[in-house]
Length: 203
Length: 203
Image 1 (cartoon, rainbow over the protein chains, first blue to last red):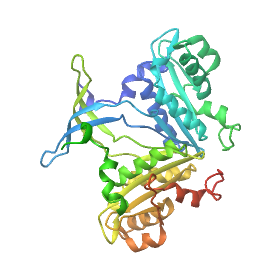
Image 2: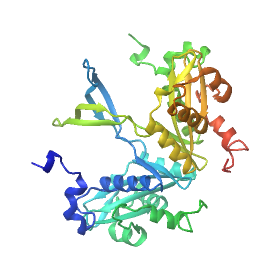
Image 3: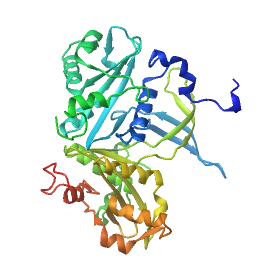
Image 4: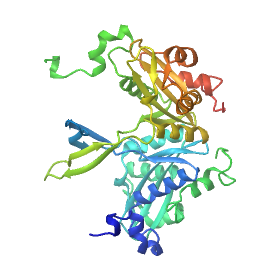
């Protein structure tokens, strides 16, 4: 494919046509990364995606050039994907996208991630799950407590997924903002900072 | 090498002979990982090392077995190596080991890491640097403010390293504990939690 000046435009530019359709065409991860960059640039919060955990087996060190990893494997993450700092509070979350129309399958979450989120809450951090139903282009904020209810229920022989209609009713729809495409701090403000994020009062 | 029961003992066990010499034989990273695991097991704090950032170029998907990364490169970290949560406060630090006898070279730290640490402080997080002089088997806690003084001085044409004698005088020696080998939360307690870590009062 040829581009003017030989430079491939950034993904955002390529997706210009999609903008009127909101998030369509961007993955949840891309949207969250753009959001976090916006928060960082505007000095609102410092939240990053953790690198993908990888088990390195072989590294080749060629002369006069960078080390090349020639054999490595993906490892399962022991924590959540995103963490950081907002108004003095520790923020920690996992983000999952589903193509399912009627429910969010709990198989998307691992037990050690739930354990991690429980620890976060116990140590007074803010922990939640971001769920996108890509079919509906809707992204929800599910607070840790609610996730835990469904998780415990599943472990006691209950449903292995959370119905879409329950999520619609019980979770917070995350507003779309042109630069903060998954503007999840809006929901954090509402739930944890009563006066809109300017205080650091505990919930 | 043969082991009883055919099981290779864990690194800690191999190093039994080193224990009387304190940290000798263990890298700073290993010591901090053991410390963080101890904090986690004892429900004291939730602090993890971030995975090494890697740029994946090629992945091979063999039939009936796990995906193999066949070409990848190390990327420079844009943040610090460790972060987490302690008594409701966000903790963020970088750890560096030097074999130098007289000073800590500031080339060990990257500008974007310092910028990240500044953001952390601005958003009311706790940020610091752990420095080990491996020759002396001494590990120091350098609070962000002090690091910044030296960093600014360097950027204004000053010293490119921090003298060991200044670190000895101005920083906090991190106590060694058998299970929390780099017991840095002791220093965090002293600096940020007046009554020994049980309150979440701000400094």
